[in-house]
Image (cartoon, rainbow, N blue to C red; front, top):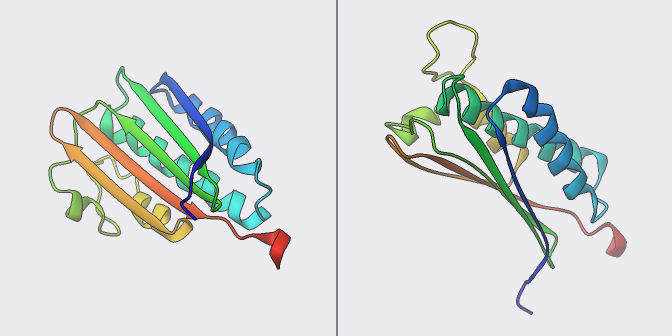
Length: 148
């Protein structure tokens, strides 16, 4: 049986650090609809928070911009969440995905954003173009607790 999209969410909001919690809360609510485990929900919220923080801090450097989130829930209980910005882009995606790599020279960032996203999801895909922005796609398959 082919999986089909059974629900969808689309958000756009200013790239302000105060909106990280908004994104985490709204996507968390969306992800809670199929009744995931508490751990699964916490994983999704954490991964989304990291992706949004990266867009705000690294994509826009704290300047003006918009963060876009799209989320899909599929019939096989897979969540697909896309966090996108139209910021500066990433010069070397593979290097940026290395633990402890950061472009933040202030010392405030640990360089663990992608590692955290990977730890809390099943798959992370990153697409980026310099001067055009970055798109991070997170995949999380939720357990089928009804059939266990």
